[in-house]
Image (cartoon, rainbow, N blue to C red; front, side):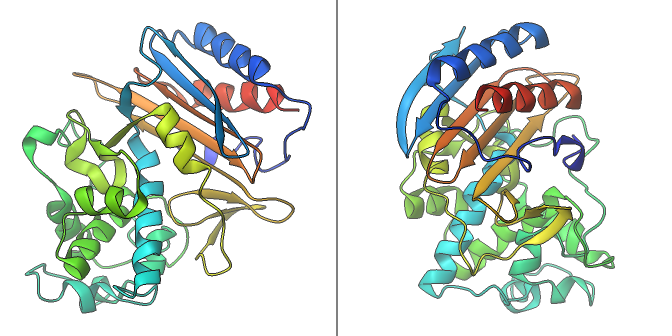
Length: 306
């Protein structure tokens, strides 16, 4: 999935007060039919309240894999721990992980929490991509394995490079700072019903949670950009913050895509957007989608909200 290629329209507009849930649902159904998506769910919120939940060949309130939407949970969890004083945005991997036995390059030991949250750490090769399916929960939590691979390498430029390894390292830092498993701690801190996916839970902090679409949509409605959020430019008008993409200037639009695509076994994906204190939508699906099909979902929902 090319995240920057999926920056289509939500950075350009702020939604319409004239939109309605029927129009949004119809846009989702039309997209699903055109994209060949047979199993999907949608949840629609307005002003933080759930106004619609529907499913295609799935109970709308059944849990579904969040894929990279899991990063918004990890990001919110980190910011909550910063508020509690468990760590700071300037805390480094060397400070928090130095006693864990992880081997780190000189640059790897100097990466900060802020840089990890914004994919600007210099970790510029993603070891989680291009493998058959190592993230199954039955294979165990892979957080430390991925963190070790990432931190042992020399780091690259400190600019935006989307890499699951950043959030794997954040998972390791949460554990080191609190003595708790992030998969249990973060949902508890945030008051959400997020669980480890039986299919993709080995990568929990970057892609392994599952929630129902309504539960995630309600959580997304609580995400409000703060002045202390770290953010790094992705493209003009769009930045990456704590597990979310943000529209810069003239609104508080947040969104993210997620996708697990494998040749064998289950594939799945998810998408959400939140327009400030207005409309929010979460969609999940069970298949591998092309970037073009995910862009089509983005466009269909944007047009429904004009």
